[in-house]
Length: 308
Ligand code: SF4
Image 1: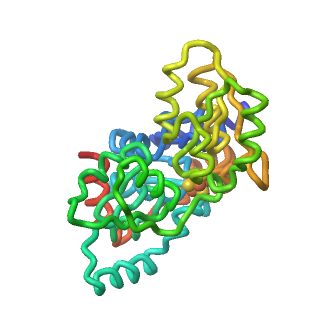
Image 2: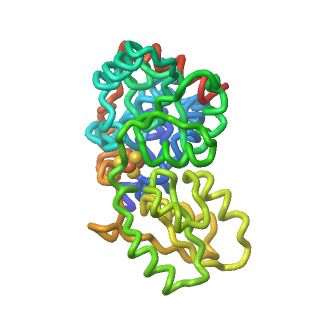
Image 3: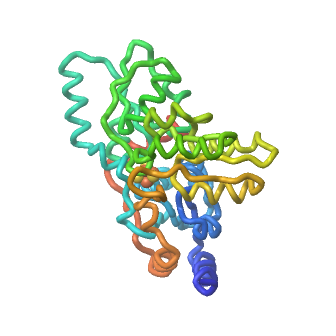
């Protein structure tokens, strides 16, 4: 293991590479990274990278976003099969047909895509949002337009609640956040009655209703910073997030909210990236994210939404 880490560090220097890792990656990968963060923080970090190569330890749409914002850099993803069930729940051709149907029916609307979507879907959208900036972006959509929100129906429902703005919701969801068990959450709350429950807005309404704080991963960390005394937290998001919480705020105790079908809530797509694959992709310069025609339009939408 130590040899492997030393090898990765050596190859990183040799290849003039920067490693970006999402909070949902295993702790050992986050520890090696130059930048860790949620999708928004990493997209912004990608624009500041000065090396010629970015290795993105996350899932495909995130590496795609890094390439779109850095066309001249080589962007590597340790496992090209690291997809995302949420992004896959909104195929671009299906979205294009649905938008056409709305236009034929005389509906005036703008499409708002959660960043967990493919570049082809971003290219069909007016705005791209993350859980961190969604509320402020939604306020920029003209009041005389409807909002078509894709692909996450749970995040869409949550945003409807906090902004009061009615939206047409695409019927997509994340397999990791959808399986939290409300029964197990209530049992945990009975065991730890003073615990504070944190939930990601990708969670279904019945989990959010029983939570003390709802926010994306970056917002969760900011919220934790407001607690000085050791506190128990019940965490309803991908389990690796607790590694980042533990390293930034070690005085607290963190308890994962269990899922209905498994107790780990680990994203199987993120888990495809391993230290061995990180080493191999640095050694071989592959797999690489290659520029696609849809990236031009997706870039305009991303820059307007996330960087300005
Ligand atoms: S946790 Fe869910 S939304 Fe995030 S990458 Fe995994 S499947 Fe996609």
